[in-house]
Image (tube, rainbow over all chains, first blue to last red; front, side):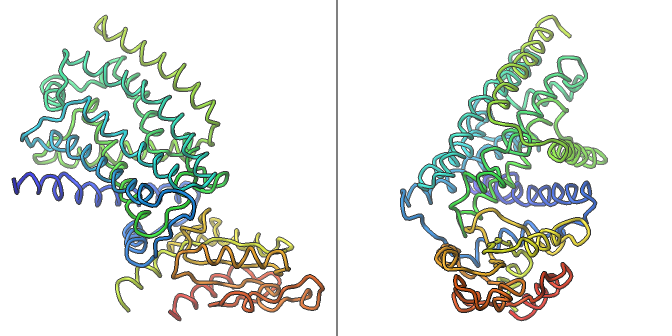
Length: 310
Length: 137
């Protein structure tokens, strides 16, 4: 029991994921700054932001709207992100215990933060938050099917295994799934899905800063916003880890391989950051077209290739 | 200086309120965030929503219509919030001080923590003002 709580709260769970994610978010901001020929924030900047919001600022409740749901939404978000993080990171660190994270459970848990943001934004009673919430809803509708197709491709590739442990094991015994044509296509599609899940720039219309002034988060201040920040940090670590588990061989934790694991995470985050820095924000209609037509088409082509054994 | 104050100083998020400004101060404020001056290295970010703000930058002359909005914005901000008046118009009223529609400089409407005079102040002056503000607290 105690060890389960330790798993959930400290090592692969909340604390570890949040701290690693915070460092990755600093990395993202630093790379963004370097791309724009700036110097960038100091290493501990995400922690300063988090503790300032958590300890110093006061919480303001919106006048119109439902305060209880407004305050509960960030709690649900961080809970969903932590659960997903535990189920993704336990197999990655090769800890076999209790419930073995099944891909579909992870898939549903990964959508809980987005749904909580929608609930919170609609409970705030702000019209701009409502616009952001409706955009987030459309974005979820467009990328979820594509993400499910990617997962289906992985399941087909390793012979109908739904278990993240056996997927990683199948790759470590054989070759990583990215080493084939279908794997490369699935990787590209998966990266775009992650970009949309994290709401990074080509798909950041729910929180478009210049347009609807942070959209879904517009009414949050103080500790609830700190929880949202922590959720974002966790998601920023677990989604790249998830794609590494699915396509890039997972982590191996002996000797020099630890360095490889680190480089894999940093490489995926670097890719996401570079996409974010080199593209403009698209309209929600364009994003829906992009996912529903093009990315689904690519994913289905990959599925057909897998069925023929490429 | 406690841990809380240290975190607050290291992560000042700025909300920009422009009164009836001639836009010179607005442009100089945006200059602070460009690669040449880069305020993000001190953790200063420009945010879109007043709910996330730690510093309220006010520039331009405040006329009667802006006054209500400025008070509203100030009340909507989560405390503690620092207020910085930028430019001659924000600090004293400048050439508009005797105008008919002028509703008083910023410090007659809301409490101001720092004044950065100039018409417009250079980005270096704005950074110096922010440094003094952070050092004062």
